Length: 229
Length: 224
Image (cartoon, rainbow over all chains, first blue to last red; front, side):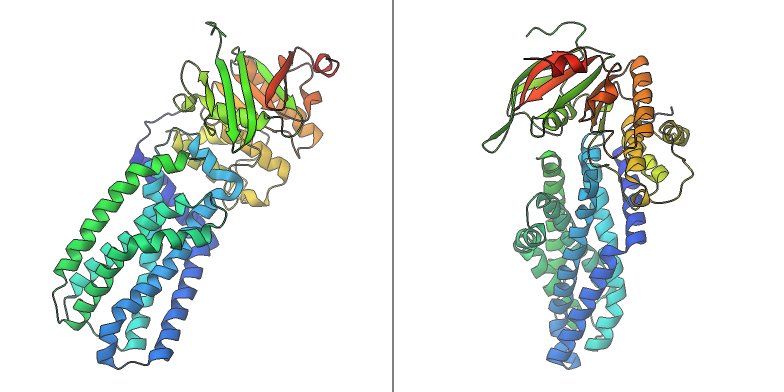
């Protein structure tokens, strides 16, 4: 038997590949997210019918609300998959480090939500007649930081609510309040970049700090969450 | 109870409560290496909770478990656990499942995965997802997963349920061979007759306690 050392990065990679493969076969998360985000875009577009100038001021909020709600669908799916046939127990009895699992799940969700954002962005531009006046690289950086803030907390709280009876309800209840600072950063930063009126630097620093704090906190607490009964 | 040198598993004053319900009540026992133990009892007797405690999946409310001198979490690399559910991903093939779970133990040997699938009389080339297997095939694949890390101690929960008689006997033969190779095996089952003449000891549980340990199944049935 060829035995190698257990490296957290190796297990993260194996788990991430496994999750991407499962998602590719079932398309559970990505289909549900796309459908949900698409509905939000269309409904908001017909409800408000804003001018191009108005759009730039409200689009930050609309975009992130759509992504936040759609992301919850993917976040619930990630762990639900591990509950079928109690597969999570196979991980819990193994010597694999818990944080390798957490990082794989977070990276997987980051990829799913990023794909969603990439697919939805052109639709937002068309429906809301958007044009970026500020710096595009800044918008890209803000999107990456904002997406990580959503998925790192979402993955952690989805794991926490895993054993609760109504976990689909529990996740938004836990996630949304704790995400408020990040949402403020994402919305204001996006608006600042789209309108070009203010600097988005403060919001970028806020999001980077938020990501650092919550990624560290989640990594410290996840082993306890995984082995909780 | 003093822990003897030969003891591989030692349980002392084990209590497990779920809320106000006590699933295990002051269980104390010692088990020797290279033996096959059949754990029997009615539904709700505490068999599965005892097995999950040995696997480290359930934390004791009181008492302790020592396996190979450590806690179950400390020696998890030497444990193989097969639960009542399969612990397999339905959307992946048997080989894909084993390949992934092997990596959790730092094993990157595809030949071992294929050999284990053959050992439980399945085909490693089968590309069908596990979700399309029959219940018996899933049980056997689940056993293969539990054997991946070549564990010193095997913990099996209802391994023969929904398995046809011939396959069940083949599984018993395989387990008997593994015991001969030095593994200690705990089997929770309702089909104790399959282990008659094979298991070294029958451990009888009732209401969260070990109430008897017998050498034969019949001896246990005729107790009291």
